[in-house]
Length: 256
Ligand SMILES: NC(=O)c1ccc[n+]([C@@H]2O[C@H](COP(=O)([O-])OP(=O)(O)OC[C@H]3O[C@@H](n4cnc5c(N)ncnc54)[C@H](OP(=O)(O)O)[C@@H]3O)[C@@H](O)[C@H]2O)c1
Image 1 (cartoon, rainbow, N blue to C red):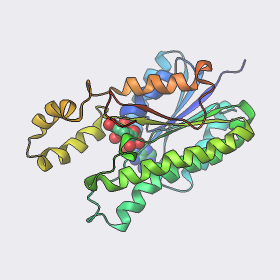
Image 2: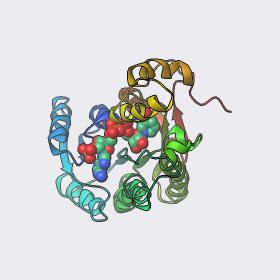
Image 3: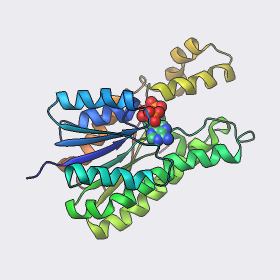
């Protein structure tokens, strides 16, 4: 069988980097996308060290032309696409009363529309391989807070959008699901804690230490925890997940 190919966005850091590296065990080639080309080069080196091929692509996925370019570069090098894993996200973390139109638009431009365009542009290739799409949402979809209004709104929209793609995927033989991480220790989580700490009368160090107990989680997640979840959903054993919103959060969400 020809080697299978995965595209992973947000692959320069955090959950995306860990996922790109993890999928190198299961795929013959991994296309790693983000803006920071130096960091992508490092991700690509680790992927190659596992024996898989790597194609690092420095792209700003907010740009409408980026998704088409990503698919064209992938097909030129590898000739097929088996999985599209949308992890890139950088929604501004601003209070609902202070957030500007530009900040709202920026959050949607990358995390929602960047992911949507990549899935649409890759769709014909995914139909040909009976491939898979993952969208990354987050627990804030289910517990919106005023200080992080847009993140929650985009994450809720992503779960709904993934369902719509899954509905189409049922007809076209493409598997589509979303994942909802809880608090995972990454650059983004640290920047969240820098805003959370003063709002709760703590230093960042105190907040980092007390946050897990405060929200009732066993520990912070690691990027590798989420990478393993994604690898499982994409594996043959995960083949019956369809339209699912899969939460992995150390117990943060207490509701049924
Ligand atoms: N960490 C958590 O606790 C948590 C919880 C729930 C959901 N999530 C979600 O999980 C995803 C990954 O989060 P993370 O914590 O791993 O974040 P992170 O460490 O900040 O990484 C974000 C990734 O997105 C890329 N990115 C940002 N802007 C981009 C753009 N315009 N074009 C292309 N790539 C871009 C970044 O690369 P460059 O800067 O190099 O472009 C980076 O690779 C996000 O969607 C986030 O909302 C995270």
